[in-house]
Amino acid sequence: MGTHADDTQADPYGEGDRAQDSGSPGAAPSTVLDRPPALLPLLALGALRSPFKRPSATADFPRTRLVLPRLRVDLARLAAYERVCGFATGEDALPVTYPHVLGFPLAMSLMSGRDFPLPLLGLVHTSIEITRYRELPASGEYELTVYIDGLAPHRRGTEVSVVTELRVGEDVVWESVSTYLARHRTPRTGAEPEREKHGPLPGVDEWRLAGDIGRRYAAASGDRNPIHLYPLTARLFGFRRAIAHGMWTAARCLAAHGTPQAVLVRAEFRAPVLLPGTVTYAADGERFELCGGERVHRVYVSGGVYPLT
Image (tube, rainbow, N blue to C red):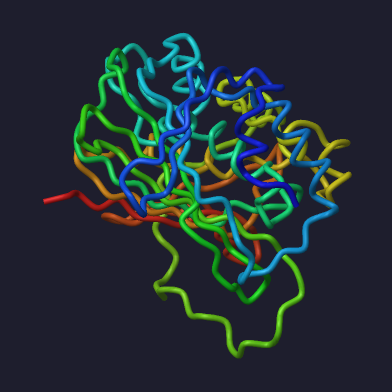
């Protein structure tokens, strides 16, 4: 396994000049980028390195914080994202989920590195928690920071937490924690943790999802994981058909639910949504679900929207 310095100093994938800043004594080192990393080479590099990874919750992980200052949003890509996710277009405000898209290339840069202990292939996005402290103008300038917060044992393998922060000046205006699961054999740890129990939420709308949703979201977000694109590429990874991006399902639900300016959002990705397909958006107060199934009530995504006071 190479050192993180080897991975971050080179620039073979269009990541631009990087400046190392160790910050205050004892703080995690920062690597400052001059532009976002190119996603496709990172995905390919992560796939090539995946067979050589030996996942473990006790493994070391990269501590570097990737920082992208003076970030401005590509308004054309933002409009494409808003259209595919169902958000209103033309407003000078970022959808609550859009900073995740901005931070995704930085997260992939960390998770495709030699010193990241989990295989990128097969890594499953299991949950996200987002806190937006105020409205974010689409025309604004931001500083973006992404870092790995730690590894934890999971009943099905090892889970990693990835933090994304958006700043204006010294103020954090948006932050998220995403968890990703690498599945592997683990010692038996007893019963599965119980989820919050409640009956099915009342259905609000039925959505018929076209087979090209994954490709349209990939074009807007840059996340071109093959499991989301075509039936053939999805079958290579064990899926009968292409599956929707988890973050698309969350964004689509939040576009329907609506969010206040200052808000905490939680979403748990519980089952893949096959494309094409039909799903039901359900909601009751703060809670929402994306569900389906004729005989059994199957929940694909569950979450909640909680105003900050």
